[in-house]
Image (tube, rainbow, N blue to C red):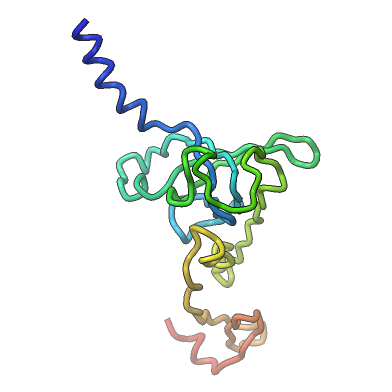
Length: 185
């Protein structure tokens, strides 16, 4: 009997710490492909989106900084063609709660289930020539889990088809400069 009580007392904390689901407690929560602010954005989630908590990948099992700050989650939803979609990614823990009763976002229906209108799937917008990833499009504070300010603009010089040297400015226009800029290593 003593062993049974001891077993129950030892396993109780393990059961309490393992959550199956969490709920988004903000508008515009970023779902990324890896834990961090500078990774590909898969989707934008809104309260009261229900997220299934998944086990951490083997490369993050011993990374306490990642485990303290991020959940690896799975969402599923039905699209307009009536197909079931599954999406796994990472969200910041601080923008989630463990029950719908704790959601503080005003003006939402907490009884809604996740549907296509609650998930904004973001395309992979990668331009290798200009080193542009789609996470730059989602700075904070509007997009929770986003970078608070855009990264400083970096000039990357390219050789043109006629031998000229240029960089692409923030508006996407080519700005031609002296050829010596392209010759620097």
